[in-house]
Image 1 (spheres, one colour):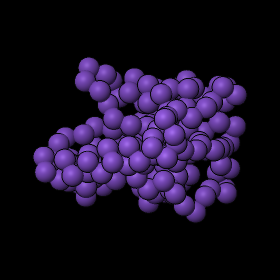
Image 2 (cartoon, one colour):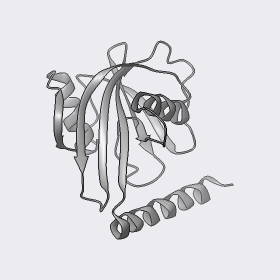
Image 3 (cartoon, one colour):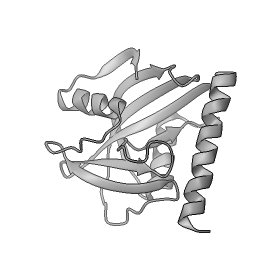
Length: 160
C-alpha cells in the first residue's frame, strides 16, 4: 500500500473518530510520556491529524490495562523501544473535541535509543535538547514540557 493511501486512510479514520466523539461524547483515558534520554526530549509527529506538530509519545489506555502498562505498550508500538516509567507528572482533562478526554502524564527514560524506529502511525521522531525545543509543538505538549522544566508537577486535576 502506498504511503499516500496509508495517510489518506489514517486521516479518514481520524476525522471519523472526531465526528463520533462529538456525537457520543465517550470517556477516554490516555497516557503520555515525557521521555528524556541523555538530556534530550523524545517527541513524535503523527501520520494523521496535525502532522506538522510535535507531541509527547503515548495513546489510549485499553480495558484491563494499568496506566503504566498502557504507556509502555504505546511507546513500544509507536517506536519499538522499551521505557522505564519513573513518576507521575500530572493528571489532565480535555473536553474541547466532544469527548471526555482524561490524560495522565508520566516521566520516563530509556536505556538504549539505538533500536528506535517509527511504527505505522508515526511520521517522524526526534530527540531535542531541552534548551532547543521545536517551535511547532502542540500547545498541551509545550505546557507539559514547561512544567517539567520548572519541576511544576500537577497532581491535582487540571485542563490539558
